[in-house]
Structure formats: C-alpha cells, structure tokens
Amino acid sequence: MLDLVLTNEEGLVGNVELKGNLGCSDHEMVELKILKAARRAESKLTTLNFRRADFDLFRDLLGRVPWDKALEGRGAQESWLVFKDHLLQAQERCIPTKRKSGKSIRRPAWMNKELLDKLQYKKETYRRWKQGQVAWEKYREIV
Picture (cartoon, rainbow, N blue to C red):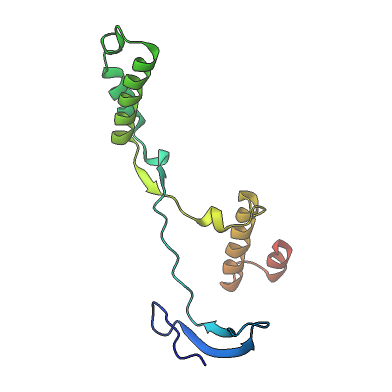
C-alpha cells in the first residue's frame, strides 16, 4: 500500500490511486493527477541584441585602434587574437545582450511569420467586430 507521495510543492498532486501489479512484479502502478503545471526553468541563454546596438560607437572604437602598431611583427595567429580581442571588447561595450526567448522553440515548424501575421490580423479583426467597427461577413471571410 502507498503511504507517501513526495513533491516539491504542496497541492501539486491529487487523486492518487493504486492500479494493481505491474506484470509479475511485486511493484504496483500508481495513477495520479498533476493539479498545477510545473514551472519551466528559465533559459539563461543570451544572444546579442543588434536592434539596440550602437554601431557608430562600435565603428569609432575599432577605428581608434592603431592597427599598424598593434599587428606589427606578429604572425597570422597572433594578429587574429589581437584583432579578436579588440572586436570582442568593442562588442561588449556597444551591443547589449538579451535573454533568448523560448517562443520559437515551443512553436511548431509550420508556424512561420506569414501565418503568425495572418493570425494577428484575424484577432485584430475579431476585436474590431466586437466593437462594431467591422461587419460579421468581413470577419468570417478572414477566418
């Protein structure tokens, strides 16, 4: 007989029932209902936010570097590392980061931008129909 169900949150599980043995085993199956959706872990993945980037400052920072002196007497590998270092420093100062949203991950592959725009238009037309600004026939045509 089941004595105890452990969860990390009170009220998470309900309607716990034993459903008999699992095959020839002495273990029993347990059926339960999850009452609250489990919280999703927040993604800590970040990406560069180019929409808010200051490209003028970026260009200015890289333009101030005396490349002749910075790369003088260095081989290809060393030159690349010096350039990369300056580039990443300028990037850090000029291009902010943002947390990557998981919306595209959870969205089906066939749900492209064109379809999302059409759905948004449909929702907007529905809202306008509710306010009496659009005829029912026009809304049904869009649907």
